[in-house]
Image (cartoon, rainbow, N blue to C red):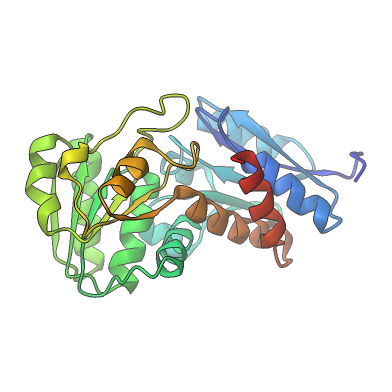
Length: 284
């Protein structure tokens, strides 16, 4: 498709974005569907400036929002979808009738990845690492739909973590615990955890040898999902596999949430097979 004056431009806004595979999969999807769209990566430090820029330029289509702007972007949008408002984080901006609307596709993407991996959620104890935008989405998705036995949140930022737990307690009936993300709290929580979900940037390219979880604490009764998708197999997933855990790579959640984004922006069914092929080719 030739880029011209009618091309709609989309992109991911975050910091960092150099690792992002979103341009590859969305541009392939636009091309497969014959849509005059282009998708770029924008490294953004000030989210308010970025949103003003989007408003001032013509032909904007839609945007992905990633670390660290998923929560702060909400104050700059015209409308927030009810699910995203309940979660308290936005990962997708849709332009419609001159207004910027905020949505969240992280929760649905994560839950679908767990279901497709045959991970049973009902009555289980889930340990969530992190308390930022993606963690909020997954926590609310699990608490609202999964009938968990217990949800434990471990994070570095105490204020952010406590706010997440307060918001969950006000909106759901799930039993909640929280603590600082360190080896002491991991050692206390992991023995009776069935599902571990890693929602921090730790282990993301280029710092691929970093991990939040000492390998000695992993056990075969765990299902481990790491939402980091680049690299495809993080150190955590590699060590979890060696410990006999079921592992769910972040690529699955990433693909699922991107499919939802494409459909929100275009109103068309996403070419999920094409998007998966492009993703998998990056790690071949």
